Length: 145
Image (cartoon, helix red, strand yellow):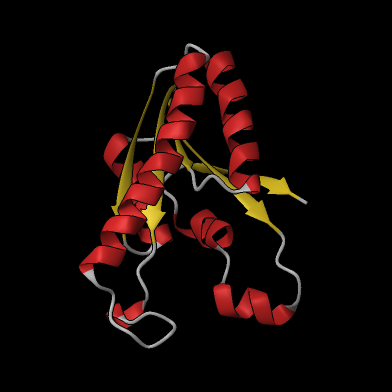
């Protein structure tokens, strides 16, 4: 059924739950798993504080995301699953859909936590909602409360 699964992984509580669900699906369907961690750069290269994104900050973020990704990969590999991963930079939805198309994923798994209040939903948007609209394959949204 699902031979290639793409897990958008950020190490958050919803991401951890998505990893567990992805693990179960992969064991059941003997799937190959690809993890992707997306460093979302602020628009126009500016941080929310108004400063420029510098190389030191970028290297620090890459190292942080790589450590998160490595932890997820280690958990899957220790369970005997075939898993690889990559850290990318850009818009989360664009990068996830690009990767899903590139590897010909059958399923994208993403964690989701309900945002409290309309302002939070408006400001941050919903990656999972946008993925459902734009993904080249099925999307499993794992809800964390």
